[in-house]
Length: 215
Ligand code: TYD
Image (cartoon, rainbow, N blue to C red; front, side, top):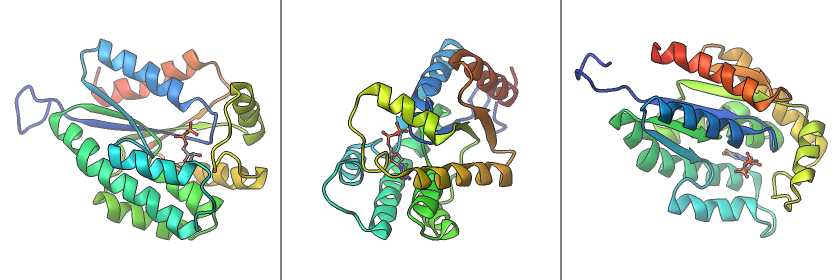
């Protein structure tokens, strides 16, 4: 309960990060189900593409329309994020809702910073500018060897998007950066071995959130 308003719940911002095919969406759905069962209002969203404007950006960055220069790609993800935070995430947090989101700033630092080999600290600064400095209360990093993740994506039988189609060394750099950010910000992160069973992972996430919600 906030000091400002008796009975008014405090918003909570939870993001799921990790490479492609690690099971973020499954975990986000399980957390949503649990929190909704506890009576919380949950806003499930994602980047890129959490808004109408964002869907247009998503189409440019993920669907093969020819090359997008790395700096243009970084700006497009940042533009999507700026609009999404201003129109969806901040209003939800202000209402006291829980926002559960697939991917956020850390994806840009890992994919554009290391994957595309731009400067990771500049990419982070760009997102911080875009969002007015909004960081999640908790970021769950689902860590998985890119080769194992690739097998999961292959099994899905869907065509690869522009980023998924990148080579192994790209995905190895992305993974290393996610782990480095988590090490640098241990209070914000929960790092999980994504090869563990989904229900076990979900239980660990619940435990961490329970501590946060005080229940
Ligand atoms: P999507 O299909 O939404 O996610 P997933 O692979 O998690 O199922 O694809 C999003 C792609 O966009 C993914 O390959 C990572 C990439 N991406 C970036 O490169 N930078 C970013 O800032 C974000 C949010 C995503």
